[in-house]
Image (cartoon, rainbow, N blue to C red; front, side, top):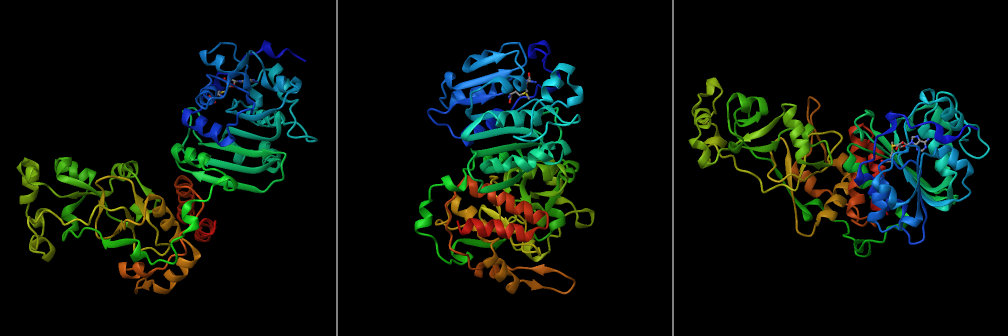
Length: 491
Ligand SMILES: C[S@@+](CC[C@H](N)C(=O)[O-])C[C@H]1O[C@@H](n2cnc3c(N)ncnc32)[C@H](O)[C@@H]1O
């Protein structure tokens, strides 16, 4: 066998894990006093930093890397450099309680001959063959890392999206999840690394060698969502939330929230503008306020400033022209106020406009906690508002929760709206107008009776599950969304 130290690491595998994700993975694997840890390709030591932050002593951590250049984080573990992990794993007798890392992503056909010779010795699992010629180093790392796990151990790896589809990974996909009591595959669509465009997958296996009870797949849009999902503890470890003991039984929506129609401008074309129109009129941002103005704007679980900014960049109509007294002194604002209706000015003789003082200040609903569209066959669902100062126009309904609905309860209510119990009631009250329009009025929504609002899960997990459920709705998989909501409300 060729000495593993005679070749070096390809440059292409130097992509490092975001620290927040490393922290979440370390926590999810379970930080216990005596547990031993293995990091098979330490790089610049982001996982070592995460372990240090959790108080794991250096003697409990073994780290390996093929690259010879030392890094100051090496001292946070017992680190061996210039060592091929795949070679090392075949000789090392120890087993570890936790293995965490982000292995190199290198196709076998780009490896040097000696590196390839070592990689080809790694078996997919006991009594299984080795990887074929078109495989990738990350897959060999997964197999070799799992072979170093102690009974009951945990495994947390950051992988490329190829985990989901690569032919060479198919035997691993079949074999690996069943080796753990609980196995989670978390797929993030946003790329985590500049050089890897496809997004990423995180594998989390808990209870190595114990009888397999659950396998879950979670899809997230952003890195932040992925981190929240990694942090979501397994069902078995969740302490019952106090609300389980005293659930809110069978309440109507009207007992938990006020649903009102969004702001009625009286002349939508004049008052509701896109970014390009705002710019072409030279209106200062201070003379407008951010709004959502159509059902497509609320097809998401949480409305953030980032979401609104995306709509703005897509030139959606997301500004409400609503100048304050001070703005009226601005030349462009004054010109727009004076503009004649036939040139795009306001129809000031219309009832709603005429009836208010000053005519250009549309009355707003109280600061919304959420938004609902009444006009959707797949609805209703709640888009919970996380953006200060955001409102909606009257194509949408705005929601204000009553004090009994704290932030955790709000997510639970949003999930309850998707349950089979509620969907059955929706089917009965929904109004179908000629021409195919399907509509729910605020009065219809107010009457919906929710199942008992009890769940063991903490708020962060409820948010993750709600995000998953709404993604199902976006994909037209409404029964899957219902199944998620039903499982939460009966937990
Ligand atoms: C993707 S980086 C990950 C670094 C670190 N785990 C992180 O998450 O930030 C991959 C690392 O694998 C190392 N590497 C490449 N081939 C290796 C091998 N055969 N054995 C051990 N380390 C290897 C590279 O030197 C690089 O530091």
